[in-house]
Length: 209
Image (cartoon, rainbow, N blue to C red; front, side, top):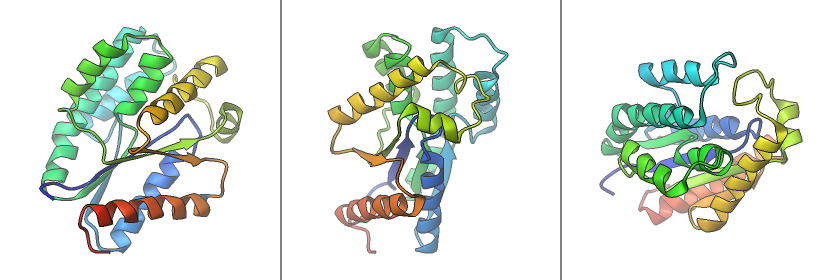
């Protein structure tokens, strides 16, 4: 391997993806694998400031402006944190990445897919995850778990249903990379599923486990 592994977690609001991302990072650390956990948008100073703008429910943001803000935060994250860690052969876990742009902006906001795909590749240096987990739950289930306080969480139920449909459509396109998990299962059961997939990836990539 000339670089480390890149693993991402995706899902609608309240799916439980963040819990699973953190659990996997802890598992890597406990088993001696150098690992970093990041969130998109965020993690970097620039990214966290952009995140505050994006999630502030008092900010009216046009969909085209929204997608560029997400891409700007992602670009900073990729060049400042993700690529350097991968070059150091660390394992990078990201709570959301480029797939979220497809689900939230391209699919649910109806922005042009081909154009946004080009911008996305440019912003993220063409980086693609080695493995992606889509923690899938029905929207009412996710909403019941969350506080629904930020700008994205407060979007309509129909919008979030479109986001979920976008994720599922993308997962169907990329079956080898994207593994769909039932977000209604107990946390520990999901953790075992995630680790099982990750162990298979590690073996394929030549890691000793």
